[in-house]
Amino acid sequence: MIGKIDHVALAVSDLEAAIALYRDGWGLTLRGREVVRDQGVEEAMFRLGDSNIQLISPLGPDTIVGKFIATKGEGLHHIAYGVENLDDALRHLKAKGVALIDEEPRPGGGGCRIAFVHPRANRGLLVELVERPAGPSAGDAPEA
Ligand code: CO
Image 1 (tube, helix red, strand yellow):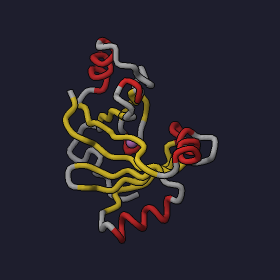
Image 2 (cartoon, helix red, strand yellow):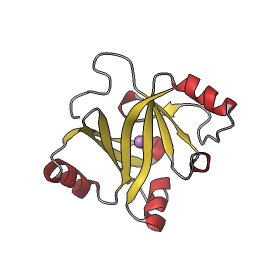
Image 3 (cartoon, helix red, strand yellow):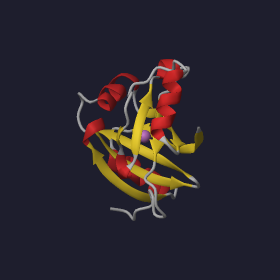
């Protein structure tokens, strides 16, 4: 059902500083950045081999990620599993009694469809399921 780790997401308070760290310090390539209002974040995506590092920065203190940083500080926020068919994956998990935050897919960055699984259903780890758009350049748009 899950094919790979699509990305590992870090919650950061200063997106510019975090981008500089991953671009200049770690030497990764910035694929793009975008505001995802639905999640209350601006995100930046860096390619790392077959996978990605996602930096997410809250648009305000009252957002989910803003509250996360206020209570836990910066750091690992979620891991995203890549799936081919998000509807099938959600149906399967629901049938297995796995608690979902999103029962229906919602729009993510880069034209993806995403859904979050409740951390209590996954031994404390917040998991995002990602279905990337089909096509040869899927998820590989040049830096915006
Ligand atoms: Co994510």
